[in-house]
Length: 254
Length: 252
Image (cartoon, rainbow over all chains, first blue to last red; front, side, top):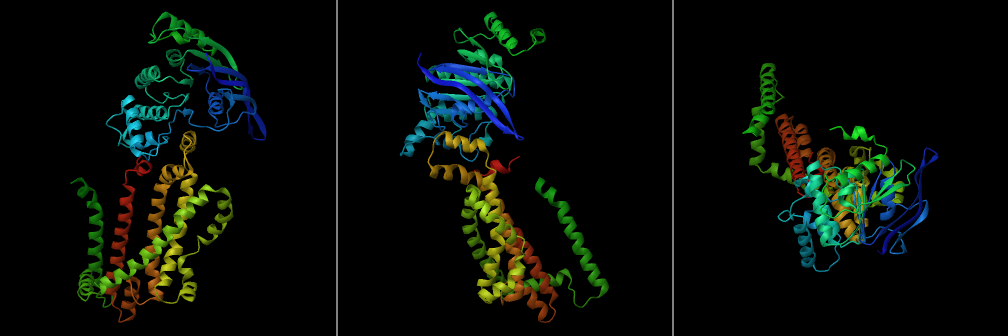
């Protein structure tokens, strides 16, 4: 597999009250082309900082980030960030949001692409709706569609579904897998939900508490669709939770 | 039906006040202060001889011109101040000093510069409504959420698209709030300006009615008409808040 993202010796410090707060300590990782990598870690460990550096919104204090072997500088539409809060523009309709990143001089072409992706995520009939008229799950669909519409090579997903209720969360994961089967993308997913990581990813990295580094890596050699109740999944889940320092006995009480 | 029910207490309060006013005037046998009925007949009189429309027209024209000029300057200026840090730190202190100066305090200077024609009140309206609109627009730019600007940057859109599809629509709700405040102030100021410097308008109607024979029925008629038109103007501005592309900001 060709290397898509390469992070080498990444460190990140923030100035805080005169001192320096080290958030990321020496992280190196690679993500293959078309690979789905999940990064799990305790809350506040610097996951989001790591993701913002990968997507180009933050510069690392030290280390290098290469995308396709080229140093990453500014964010661009080759890699779209999808965050937990979402960033669908509330003042534009669904269709206008989906057309936002498209570069085509003909309005009709843009509309065509927007409507194609709206249909792909099941938002047909809502093209003219405003975001405040949609549910949380539909907003996420719009967000995914807007990202897919510009045909990015990489999706950076920062806890994309964690604000959704459990049922919608599960639906969105299946939806994402369905779309990824159609359009191949490299995905970097950050989550604190171990089950979500196992459900979606090819490889899972566990981060340590702050200052964060990669503590363990797990390959998920399971065919899609994955059965979340299967013994293999449960075994993997326990192993990852142990890495995260969660008491396995407590975790098994219903 | 519900709306009627909701406004019943408000109507009741006004009715009680009117009744009390009427009773007090009758009881004290006041010769100067009019009864509500005398105010009504005075209004009818103004409508019949056509002066009411002329005064309303004159006041509205001044507000219309002064306020429009203020919008044309305040919105682009506010956007610029909000977007460019250097512009903000250079000009904001000056605006903060000018802003609390009552428009009434500007009247002597307005007369000096613009005479006693229409230009003076237009200038006063401009000066009174431009600052709240600049402040609101600038604050609107400052409060655009980072995530939206990040998204725009992420999709690599042109500067033109950034402004047309992100910055301006994101600030629009705040601009409308600024316009509501600005128009409210403008309406307060036009009446005050007309009381001092002019020969037409609702403010002139009030001051002239008092000076020319203590016609307090006309004074009160003028006051009520000013109140009602102010309410109407605010209602028009409120209609803007109902636009679908800005409702996200007001809907809670």
